[in-house]
Length: 455
Image 1 (cartoon, rainbow, N blue to C red):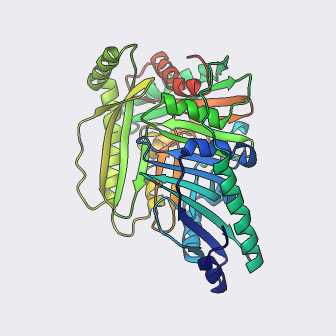
Image 2: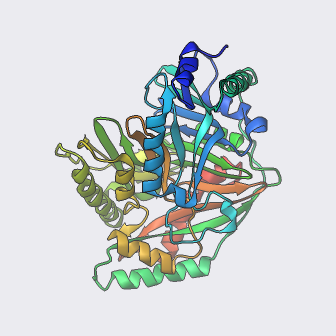
C-alpha cells in the first residue's frame, strides 16, 4: 500500500505527526492478533475488551511513552490537547486514531515494589499500530511521525509491512492446561492485624466508615507466564469482565475486572457500583441461592450502599440529568458474585473526562469512605504497595475527550515465571479478619485459573 495522497499533502502543509485510520476486513479475532505480535512486540503490547465483547483494542509498538510524573492528569491532558491540535488524522471514529492506553498508580505517594518494573508509577503509550473492534466494524490505525518526506515514506512502508505481517501470522491459541503453580500468601499476619486495627477504629463511630484492605499472593510457574495464554484462559472463564493486558519490557499487568470506573462519550458519562461478595456454587441452583443470600446480607448491602451513595453524588457533579438509582442486582462470574448497580447521565459541557476519572478514583469499593481518610489509612496500615492494582486502567482520546476506564481488579503483575496477584475486601465495623481473608482467597481464584493454577 503506497503512501496516500492525503498524507503527502498533509506533510506539504507542515504536518509532521500522522494518524491514518482505515476500515479493515478480517476474520481474525482481537486476541489472535494480540498473540501474533508476541515475538516482534514483546513488552510493547496492550489488549482491552469490554464485558459485552462489543469493543476491543489491540496496540503494538511505542510512538510515545508517558510514565511516572508524565501520567499526572494535567500532563496527560496537555499531551492529548497537543496531539489533537498538531497530528493529522484522516478519520474521526471513536476508539481509533491517536489515543492513549495505560494505567495509573493507585496512590502516587506510595513507592511500588520491584515486581512492577517500569509500570508501577503509571504507564501510558500511544501505539504505533492499533486495531479497533467496534460492534461489527474493524479499523486499523497507523500512528507515526516524519521530519522529511522521505522519512514519512519510509515510516509508512515499515508500519504497513508490520501491520500486514501481524494479520498474516495470526492463529487461535488453545487454553493453557492446568499446571503446578506454587503460591504463597504474603504478609498474612500483618494484614490480619491491619484488619483488626481497622475494625476497632470503625467501631468508634468516627468519621471513617469503610476501608478497603488489599493483600498479595506470590505465584511461581514452571513455565514463563505469557500474556496471550492468560488472556485465552480469562476469556473462556470470566464472562462479565473487562479483559486487559498492559506490557512494559519484561513486565505484564493482566486482569479480568468486573468494574467500570467511567465511560465517557461526547454526550454521556456512565459508571458502575460494585461491592459485596459471595462465592458461586457447585450448581446453578446453589449459585442462585447464594446470590439471593448476598442480596439480603446486612454487612454486604451496607458496604455496597456506601459505594452507591458516593458514586451517585460524584456523578451528579458531572452530569445534567437526574440519575435514577435502581435496586442492586447480582453480577455473576465463574468464581464470585457481586452486588451491582449501573449509573449514567448526560455529560455536562466542558467537563474533562480524565479529571472526572480522577474525581471518582478511588471509589469506596477500592479505597473506602471518606476517600481521603481511607487512602491515608491504607497508606499507613496496608502491607506492601498496590502499584496499578485497584487504579484506573483504560484508554482516552484527545479528539473528542472520550474514553473508558475500568478499576484494575482481579489482576496480577508478572515477569518471567514469577507473579504477584492482588485482592482486596471492604472492611466495615462488623468485619471479621479471618472471614475477610477467606473472601480474598475467593477473589484470587480468577487469576489463579488464568495462569493455569489449581484453586
